[in-house]
Image (tube, rainbow, N blue to C red; front, side, top):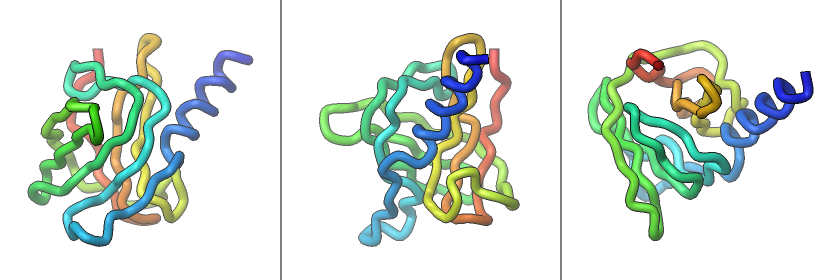
Length: 120
């Protein structure tokens, strides 16, 4: 029970911690700190500052900022409904086999993307 609550709190913190939009780049959906390491397309990304940009209607680019050089293109499907981070841009992380997986990206309270991927 305690481990489940801790994991839920870590995931919630990762989703909303320091998320801001970047007004200078219209294609930027998320810019902020991710406090835990996470997996994208089978590759481990370290905790740190990230930017997510829209490359096309179904492809997003996630890349680290400052000295973090991690980057990946992500195939997605449009999602609508309820942003787990409220009105803030959000990265959605799900714990799978002891590692956090990036499962979604939300731009606003009702517009987001689900990551197209099978988790191992």
